[in-house]
Image (cartoon, rainbow, N blue to C red; front, side, top):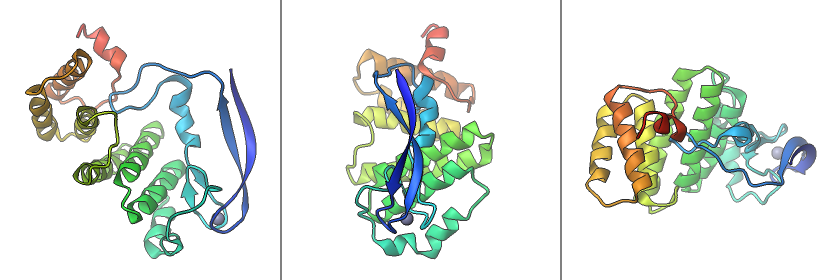
Length: 222
Ligand SMILES: [Zn+2]
């Protein structure tokens, strides 16, 4: 059973009380994921609850009441204000982008990359494809920084690269996506990984930039 309720959170930066919806998932949900890791079913829409924004100081974090480890000067910086004020992005995407900026300030590129990919999902949902591309390009850059600094952002290196391949495909960088696919196909992997690499190759070969998930792969008979 899934329960939705409201809770008050005191911002750890300015102390202001904010009210947020929270979800209590009493059963673990598993299901088909998109090729870039976005979950399905109820969890798909829960992305809108993964980030909180303080209405007073605009601090954005998964839990604004948890101790803030970010230097407050970043929250007061013109760069942060510029992200918060950029209304060309959907509101939840703005919050993820702001959180990404703060994670970047701490050198946490795995976290900043995921925040940007979540921002892209929100842009997808809100019919903002150009904004989604901007967020995916930034996510790609941040995930590459994460790899350079040995910060893990998925279960294994090849699964990280599958996320990069899908991001590159979604932004239309087919040559780079194909090159990374071919590079991984020269290495030994479990069958499930081979199937995903093969499926990405098929989609890249068709210049397909659409969102696909693992069940689409089964329909193709892969
Ligand atoms: Zn605050």
